[in-house]
Image (cartoon, rainbow, N blue to C red):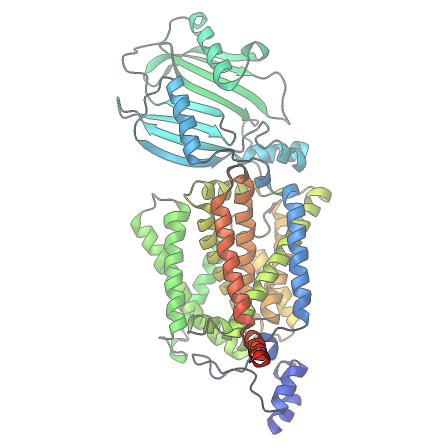
Length: 577
């Protein structure tokens, strides 16, 4: 009783009771929560972090509204909803092999199978005709993505490559060397031109009679005399020029190319480049600060070791699979070790920081790795984070649409184009999205938690801490899946609003809730993008990924409600016993 009265009289508002339930629990001498057994000494969790509150029903309603807003605005703002992929990998391979037979190209071992993007085409149309026109032009008729399939020529070891757009139409064919036994060109351009015109009509449905011949001549290509022709459409499409190139060597097609070209020298507005440097600087700061505090914590705490192992695996995955399979082994191992060290020493910095300004915010995160994952606070944190992530999806989708519709902003095509190309080039894009989203959730929580713990050293006013943290992280240009719009000034504004919501999540709830919110946002955005593009194929991998995510959320809900479920079971058993 005396302890409860003394706590009510605390000068610092953060040290007083935060709800009527907490006061009632203290007066009736009922424990609010079990103390944490770990590096942070006995910390009592406030009731709002251990029990479903009335305000959580508003959070549930916000998540439903967020999903509805996202589903409405996503097709109006995201490029992924336009260029549908109408085939799976097996169909694409058969289509490419059929083109190779028609082109008399012998193919052997497959060397490359990837998806590439052409972001500058979208940017140019968006700048000259508007974002709606740029979205509508995706694969209709301008290809923003093309599949690159390359084989080895079994005759001489050279490469034979093709580019095929998402509708299965050939856009480029090239042999690295002339057909064996052919020594030179066909002779005069007049003799070669009918063959080139036939190739343009047959493979590109391009009628040279309706185009302008803008270039022709005998050139030296691939070590042999070649006849080269270039046609150009008489009209522009949103400022782009449709062109068709044909190169013949000895009557055989050496190069075919059908494309929409932007004016020479145009590269569009480059995305923010300082984000990676900012993340690196923050992680290095975490590591250094952790080194200075290693004597004050339990270095062998289970959760610390688990976080380091997760950092090792995620770092190795990020460069080994995420960046490229051809990455050197030393680079893969090196980044994995760097992420493991950042996780290990960063955990020390976070633990020490939160132990002074709000230890309850890290308790459920510690329990997650210390054998307490099945506790109600952990389940409730994951459930609340999921609801907040869904609400954030709708908020961002609505803000992006508002910017595009009213203020002339456009999608950050470099991110959308390259990220979706990277994901679609993988065997199971949905699985890659799950891991990538986990990387984002943990990394962003680490960064925001670090900045918040520093800000709270100087001020205890929550709104000041939230504004300062959101401004700092947004100003550092750390986007990941958030705020992907152009120009950069608008991206920073959108990032600030996003981070304001995420920082509020940490201040009002805890670190685990923040992790779950960012994971949910990143996963649902990226996986729904893949599902939209692969809709004609059924997208079984993406539906499977959503099923795994839904199962995890369902388990979290059951864990969060386990005491209520047990109580209901006892009442039912007593009634029928």
